[in-house]
Length: 296
Image (cartoon, rainbow, N blue to C red):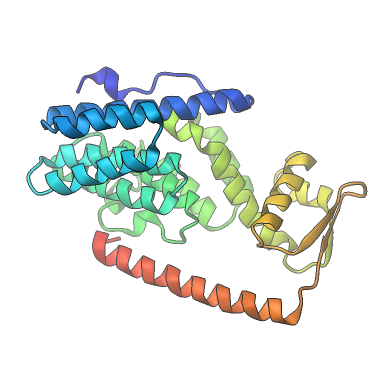
């Protein structure tokens, strides 16, 4: 593939929702083209034609299916660099579908394949792995794995290392300082830049839950200050999302800028405890299988 196909050379403005939709479409198109070129390179012409059709139809589900089939049929014979490209494409597809765990798994496999091939692209793929890992709210530090550990202090990676540390410790001020001080290392990549808003919402939601946990009533202006001075409208948006996701039972008084945490019925508390316990077991099982399968 040419160098041009490796580039993502378009602008993105997080202040314009229409532009955000255009950006997502462009990222999807670029990833589809890259996967299509890969299939051409390895001679899989039947799937190449299907990729063109599914991309035109925006049928993401079938496009992912084609990617998975290409991975299965070529993984035993293809060069590690090719496998790395397939996994990187897969990771980007899953990111666009907001399936963070699947993206994290693919980026890790892509990184390992690139590393095996001695491909410089491994560092970029490692950045994407760190990004997906944070968006999935995983408590596993990517750099604890034996494959990623040697790159922890690499000059191209160290900004992501600091970002991960701040994220895992819910240090919102440090997290934003790292972002602001490392624009070139982090924000210059359009793919990463596209997900920064989602990443900020993720860590802010995590910190917000910790802030409100001991209280029954809180001033939302105080919450805004604790979240590094974000607008009150953003605090209310975060709180509304937490309510809709049933992570908190609360009422937001926008007139008096107050959050009121509501008491749940005993049976709801019991059901929530059981659900949390089951979720924890599922996450532990998935994490154990993932570590066994990938070495993380």
